[in-house]
Amino acid sequence: MKIGIIGGSGLYQIDGFKILEEKELNTPFGEPSDKYIITEYKDKTVIFLPRHGKGHKFPPHLINYRANIWGFRKLGVKYILSISAVGGINPKMKGGDFVIANQFIDFTKSRVSTFYEGIFSKEDDTDLNDKVKEYLNNKRVVHIDVSEPFCPVMKESLKNALSSLNLPFHQNGCYVATEGPRLESSAEIKALSILEADIVGMTLIPELVLARELAIHFASVHIVTNFAAGISENRLTSDEVIEMMKQRNEDIKNILKQFLDNIPSNFNCSCEEVLERAAI
Image (cartoon, rainbow, N blue to C red):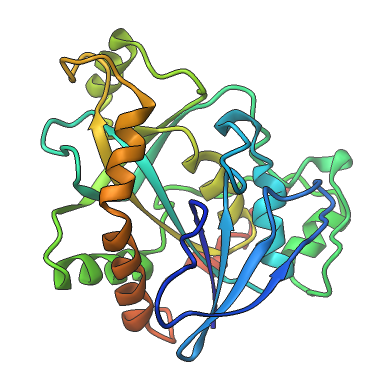
């Protein structure tokens, strides 16, 4: 079982994880954010990628999301867990809480969010023989269903991991993705709260959508670092985000280990069927 982890730099430095290789990949969509750190944990291969690159060199709107997700496909990954910091919109989701996303609202503006571009599609460079290759190489236009965008089996494993560690968490959160890199205005956050968004961030989309286009099981867990604009009484700073992530660093690693220990070998979900009858 190969599981991809998208998060921050150094997340792979966990007791019990044996680093096997750091692999640099090229893709039809350009270069990923960094090398993939291939590790072994018990009976699983766990592959880490820092989405912003080591040293946080890529802002959210300039991350090569397609290359990042395609690289996981080339490495044979069928499951991806995304970890990131978010701002809290729902007053119940306060700083230090963990949130498992179950829905999203996309307010990004300039990001390419599909692999399937019809006559402009890139050729599949993998050895796989599946619908992804068929659709890309035949220049098909594809419309995937995202009614239930996250893998229910992975979400349940996350819930069990958080419960077993007695950490504060919310098992259903609507993530709104904004373009960045600026933070949101108070008026924007007020509008998003009317739309019943719970948390706000800048990276989940198009990560999630691209993974789903490749029929990869995907789930995400987020750390609320502070309340969003207009909800917080203070000026928002990056220092708050960095400090909260430092405070929760060991908790994140423990969640990851519990998640990997409890994830089943057989998945009873429809994630891998998403490309059936999706092409025109």
